[in-house]
Image (cartoon, rainbow over all chains, first blue to last red; front, top):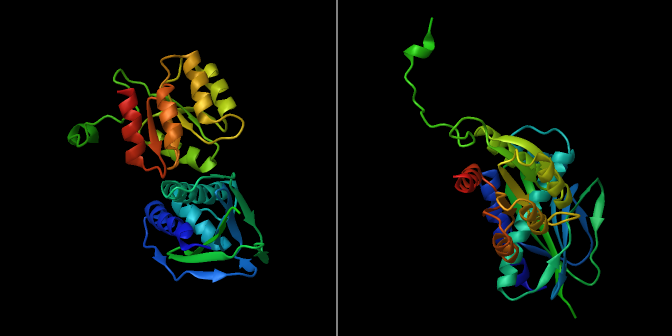
Length: 154
Length: 144
C-alpha cells in the first residue's frame, strides 16, 4: 500500500484529535500488518470505494472510548451508550472527511460508506489481499490506532 | 440586604440568543448525530437561544419546519443524513418559506455541496469540528 494514502489520515487524526480534545497528542511509529490483527474493543469503520478502495478503522479500547466521548461532551459518561457511540462516530467522521479532502486534492476520486461502530471483546480483523498500515496515537485518554487498508482499484 | 443595588454591572452585553425586543431566538436543529445535536444545542442554549425542535433526517426536518412556522427564527442543517440530505431539505424549506434562515453544518470535504446549498438559499455554513465561537459567530451573522 502506498504511504501517500495514509498520510492524510495521520495528519487529520492528529489535528482533529488535538483540537476536539484540547490535549497533547503523540504519534507513534507506523507499522504494517499483512495478517489478521486484534481489534481493541471499540472500532469505528468507514469504507472507501472508487479509484481507491478499502476501509479505515479507528480502534481503541472501551475505557479510552468512554474517556474520549466524555471529554468531547464535557460530561462524565460511564458506558458505551448511544451518545458515546455517536460521539466516537463523529470523531471518525471529522477525521475521515478532512483526510478525504486531502486525497481528493491529490487527485483520488472515491466515495465513503456510512460509518459503523463495532463493539465487543476478542475481535480480529482480516483484510483479504490488502495489507493494513497502522498508526498509533497516544492521548491522555489512552491509545487510538488508525488502521488503514486501501488499495488502488485494479 | 439589597445586594443588587450595591454591585456594579460588569457585563452589559446581552446574550446573543436574545432578540433586541426581548424573547429568545427559536432554533430547529437538523442532524443525524446525537452528539452534534447536543453540542449545537448546548452552545446555543448557553447564549439564550431556545432550541424548539430537533430532527434526525431531512424529511423530519422539513416537516418540523412547517409545523413550527412562523414561530421559528433559524435552522441548523447537517448535510449528510439518511432519508433526505440537508441540501434537498433546505430546498424544500426555502420553497415553503423564502425568508427561511438556514445555516448548513458540514464536515470538511463537502465544499461542492456547501456551494450548492448557498446557491439554493442557505444563509451561511459552519465546518466541523464545531466550537462555541465559530457557531455563535455564524448564527449571529445570519440573524443580525
